[in-house]
Length: 389
Ligand SMILES: *Cc1c(COP(=O)(O)O)cnc(C)c1O
Image (cartoon, rainbow, N blue to C red):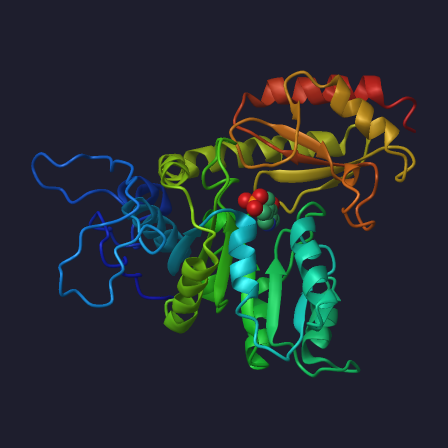
């Protein structure tokens, strides 16, 4: 399925090139000021909280909670990449909260059993407030579709289907085209968290999803120096775009202009960063699978995120913690998608799902030299995992 090229919002600072360009070209060329002599090639940061309006102008607030030229520039790049209309928000969770606010009232929300842990916590909060929330394993296509239809459950078919693929941190892969088609067949709104894959690997809107959400904090910005989020709505669903825009204005979780400008600078190199990080991940996934200190590698075959189960008792955090402590090039830290390689034992969070084993390490592979990354992992796994067989 193809969609028309999105039109940038009014006040777009640049002439946005057609998405018919390859993503590698589009991330570099989109969201620039118009090409007139003397114009800057790179947009500046729009720090204004208010804008001059004509005295008789109706309907345009001209206020910084409603509009900002730096937002518009970033939104035109991300919207074009995903094939929809983007809105930038203060964080990935602000984008997720905004999308969940559009769930049709009175109908269940269906979500993966083990999505990103803070998404899960927010869904639990909604459930505690009386909202029906249903869970099903997202990699079990038939089971997820049965849960969607509501067979044998109270509440009928789901009104909103929440998807995340690959999931954080179990790296479960959903059959997105099939699940999206099934959800639409039941008239459900479909939201997909595309943070791990990025629009370079998959565009859920092309498969009929209504809304894509992103933690821009991760690959899109790419340098672990800011927090930001975004929604992108299907070009046919201007009603949803307006709903999200209203949510942003009224709930006020707006993005800082400086963060947005840094994300715009970061997304210029998305393609080269992601290509290099994914190539590194492919090499590491293959070598880790043959390492005696590793019981299991979870890697979906593309992308730059992977997880390993450290050999030994799956519910013993000790060996995995020792691996992280022994690393010198990799940094033991949360978050992902930056240029630097990060590693984290996810069960260190009390709120992480017990479906995630204590021995699991999540790896965000960066753009360093892959031999340096491998040598560091090899020495840490070898010294930290005593007699793994
Ligand atoms: C990090 C993350 C989020 C939350 O984004 P923030 O920018 O930290 O609020 C949501 N979904 C996934 C898959 C993530 O990895």
